[in-house]
Amino acid sequence: MPASLIDGKAIGAAIRAEIKERTAQFTQRTGIVPCLAAVLVGEDPASRVYVRNKGKACVEAGMLSRQIDLPASTPEEELLDLVVQLNADESVHGILVQLPLPDQIEESKVIEAISPEKDVDGFHPVSAGRLLTGQAGFVPCTPYGILKLLDYEKVDLKGKHAVVVGRSNIVGKPVALLLLARHATVTLCHSRTQDLPGVVRSADVVVAAVGRAEMVRGSWIRPGAVVIDVGINRLPDGRLVGDVAFEEARAVAGKITPVPGGVGPMTITMLLHNTLEAALLQAERSRS
Ligand code: GUN
Image 1 (cartoon, rainbow, N blue to C red):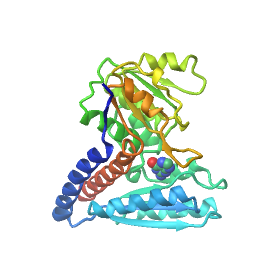
Image 2 (image 1 turned 120 degrees about the vertical axis):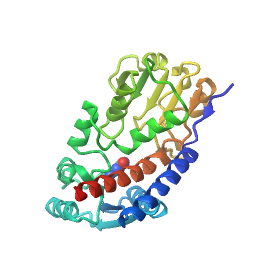
Image 3 (image 1 turned 60 degrees about the vertical axis):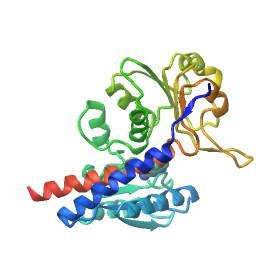
Image 4 (image 1 turned 90 degrees about the vertical axis):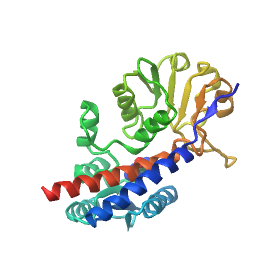
């Protein structure tokens, strides 16, 4: 029997409906409308689409969206000044600077300039440290979305072997920490891992986040395993594929996320979640 599909579009829509409801209640109670400021530097077409979709999703959830477009030639100082302004702006609750940034701008400097209270991407070292040490804080949206998918699918993680392929700060490392916090035994693999197929074969849960089209083959998947595919890769023939060879893996896995329609819709969903949380926290803090 082929794997059942994990429908990120449907799960994301269900969570967004809850967020919309909670946002309406919050606004009714406080008069505050949660606001996300998204900064886009340059003309990268993919980034432009992502930022536009984030803004649209905010409005659909009853939140405000402010998009600030800057030219690709923007000096680092100017972007840092903008972040300082947004930090001080009480009508802005979440700040997101779309990555990647042009070469003249050091990403880590910009991320560190964002107030941790408004760090809805969860990329600030304070947020990363809180996740590492198990304290409450903003969790990066894609890893958080993956955890929600596993929760909705009632995947039991306790004592299970979770293998994460890819060690980025945005996905691989934080998802490994989230799985660990749920008592999984976690192996974090990367391009230099020896016998990667063998390691993946021992996994109850596989998270593929390497950014290489169809790298994880069906023969690497243990029968019945849960497969989460974070990849979005465009093939020369125009097809959109994940980091997992979908049809091969589907034939052996127990559950699998499709691309598109799996992890993708969850990222923006959790951004909305974080933006509402930011507004709630800031409202609480300004009352006390
Ligand atoms: N670039 C790719 N993914 C992301 C993301 O989640 N947030 C930001 N700010 N930039 C990204």
